[in-house]
Image (cartoon, rainbow, N blue to C red; front, top):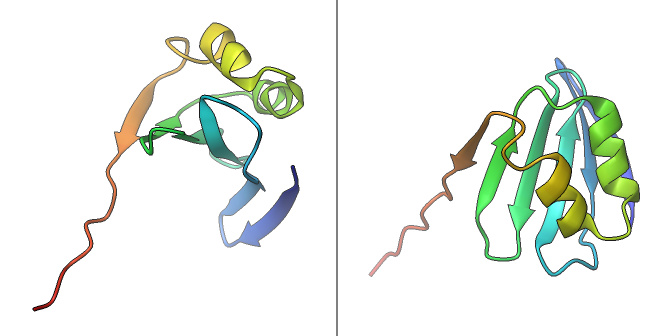
Length: 91
């Protein structure tokens, strides 16, 4: 697992690579907005709002990320699903 910090104009996004989890494929944390972006192994993606950095850091360090997510994040922070961009097909 790796992480890298990227700087943009008004965003400090910390991305975490693909991880060994049966529930979470990857996640990223926006330090400026306190948003946690989560992609599940099902392909569904959500953004959780008002997530403290300590919670995102604890998720990163958790041995069982799915268990940590389900007990400390799911249903505790406002969230919305992020729709996938549809690929256009040309014939």
